[in-house]
Length: 557
Figure 1 (cartoon, helix red, strand yellow):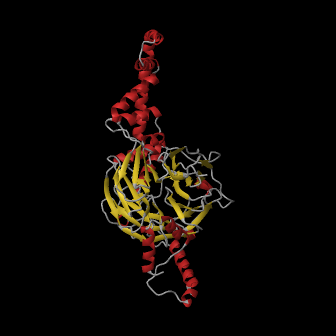
Figure 2 (cartoon, helix red, strand yellow; figure 1 turned 90 degrees about the vertical axis):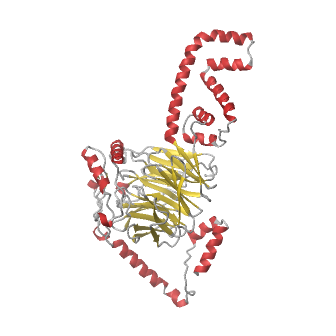
Figure 3 (cartoon, one colour; figure 1 turned 60 degrees about the horizontal axis):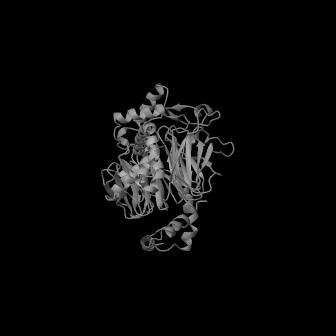
């Protein structure tokens, strides 16, 4: 198809809001734009030879030596300190730093070892400039390593299964994306009406605890006055001389819960004049996790809102991600823009423009400052928070880029596309470092292991491919478990467990130590099911608690 026709077609579909048709075209039809005349029969007959040459070039690319697989020096230093004190470390499989020809297989002894990650073997002046880790961040990281749970197979694996905290959004059918911060204190969800809602669970828990303590004091006070006032109260009721308001007062004096209900009603009447009660607060009360009575008081007195509403986009918000320090939130939208928000003030700090089509995914670098985006325009881009234009443009996919993730050292990014490929890019030069083929359907999710040497990608057919990054080869395929797309992947902090979230409403956990064992078909360690919520987000905390999230769908099953 000519470039002019290609542009007309996609502009019409975009402006007419035929997003479903646009998605079907990208999934099942490969469209190439060209500036030359239509291909002749001779050119068509030569296509297989051109494709063979292309495959040879891709194989050569995957065999090239690449030195950016190691960890950052600061991460290596912290794990070394932690290991000297008896904790910390990551799973480090026996994969060489060179090409695929000299990659050694994982030995049984190395499977069980948690060691300090190998640092990058390149001069700092050739790597991407990385901000220095602050002392406060180092101390927090060491504290998390000390409190981290050792995960693994329960039988002979030397560890335990992770605990899972599943967040379900109720009455939120228009939700288009969910994100949870690494420490599970903030939750953000994008909606089809172009808004973003953000919950602070840390404040919710603190408020619920303080309200619970207040309840206990009121109950003790009511119990102490019960003995002295019960006879007088009974006389008032039997005499029948009290009005309805007095009987409410007697009930409130005898039953602390009734006393609270009366107080809430009184406060509600006073606050209705000030318009402080939100009609949508009840919808989110079950999500926040506090007690119903505590949430009701928050709704009434307005001392702490249930969520903050971020307004600025002009289209559905398809993706969101928190920075590692929780100070910022990134969102990507159908309006082709990326917005940076302050999580404390809920204000939009910047708007980044560069993509010509909707933004499907955004992700912060593990060290902050940098972030990457994936778009329907078949490109991924590298940005920094201090500049409004992209620093790098990664072009090479033949269809829209669905997902993007940073390598732990922030010098490499991985992208997955509906062209059924996974590509790795050198951030410094912008060139492709690896190209992996194998998926029979589009790639919807990708994740990097903490050791920086293994990546996983999830497809729309429910299969997960595990890749050896230095060797440039496929390790294994995790299949026969999920019936729908794998839309979220994440490795545990020690790299021992891979979690997969699927649209079939389940979460599966896999032992990474077994990914190179060729004996038979791998089975997950465990699989968990939701009642009626596709799992669209999974993430491990630094202490190896697994967070999962999804939107309740009535017609899911």
